[in-house]
Image (cartoon, rainbow, N blue to C red; front, top):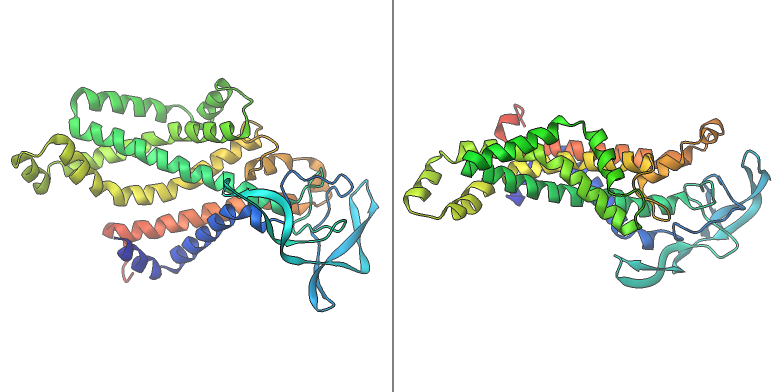
Length: 350
């Protein structure tokens, strides 16, 4: 199955490029502390709204140009001619825990204090946007991945049982899914978040958002799985299993549900962007991830000051570009997987 999917993706350049891009993004999220020159909470009030620093080649090594603040009222910085700080590769910096478990102080690159490096500029409190973007990717991308796993599990279980058992179990499950699908998603999202408290520790907030988004997203998956099970349970191989006396649970989990995995794979890929956008919407409205943690939605929410647009602090909008890029990549990958696993969607000559 995996080999067939890989061959199908190789025939679809857009899907293959999207798959590699997503692998790169998740790899960056996993190694964000190592790739970042500092930590996301490090502030420098003397360098607020600092523009991205330029990299130059000087004295036979890569260096970062130094700047001086000319006008604090408009955050106008000018480069200091001939002054630069060398980048140190694989050097020690602030302590962190890789994967949340392994203590380390090794960073891909750093500069010696009091020099600084802002590859994507700094925010209103002088924090490195590049570092916060990398750390935020772990939360934004992680919520999508964990949320879709929970949604797929709930949808597979509820839809599979409803389709196979029928009767009152089917009616109860479908009425519940219809209720969830009838309520506007955004309003239910905000109501659940407000009802479950507006202030949680960062870890609890992350898990809370995952649970809320999963509770909203499983209904559609359950209905489709139910329909697939209803069509599959009349197939000859299911009827043969019944005649041979196999137990109902064995038939359900060994024969019926595995035949829905191809749909689940495509549906999960296409659903991840919804979770990423849901987290971004909550954080943008101040109901999602809270300081001192970082997420793409939180960074966008902090960048909605009119000053940012008037003075063209474009680097503070890079989380929006990251969200757009990720959503497009997931959608292209989902389209490619759909064409690969379902022959009805294959285009002529593909």
